[in-house]
Length: 281
View 1: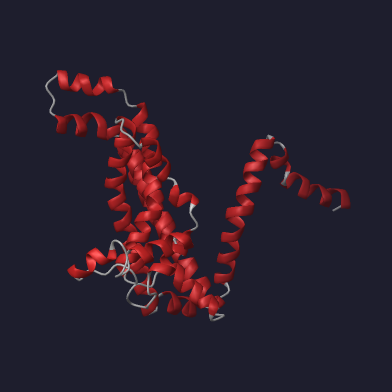
View 2: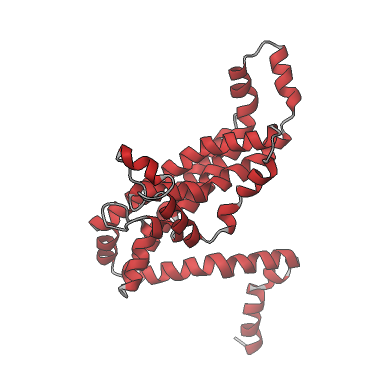
């Protein structure tokens, strides 16, 4: 084989990339650099570990308790925000009231606020001497430094995903559809379930999925409002950080890889359910 034939192979291998338009090249390059390469590096590191060692670390009692706390709390936060976010988005789009613009701008506060500041604020407000915590203390309800505090932090950071996903869809629904349903004798509940809910359901599921994914990976606010005690309120992101502090790189890699695989499977299931729901719209 000649040297010219050997040198042509790399060119042919990347010829398809050169044939793409510049926007496609930028998209593929950006996705490779920011998403695929870091994931590939983590999987590569995890693949060097013996299977027995990987399984033992991934299924250790503290790891299993952490998975349960993380995913269960994130699911409950996403479910509550699915309902509350739906109502908030509906009110912001369908009603006019004083302070509407201020409230609408406040929805984006969790996006702009550093998560550490959010955690510090929530821990202070919900402490036993805080504005809200002092009202809950006589009822023997503790929020800060408990798993409930983790749930509150996840509620705070995931709400905008539901509201901002639903608002454009609600805006596109014509009010004439509701009026037509009413004129045909439909009750408010029938109008909601048969006219309004079907086009809003896919957007609601998308917002809930985004909020769930954001809650699963939350660290800054959770680490400050929780006591971070194993088997109580320790979540996966904090456990990974603790292992890194202990220079347990392999343990952090195993927990991170396991979390990534579980999250991918759950998001795939949510997307399949959403696609199935669209077939019957």
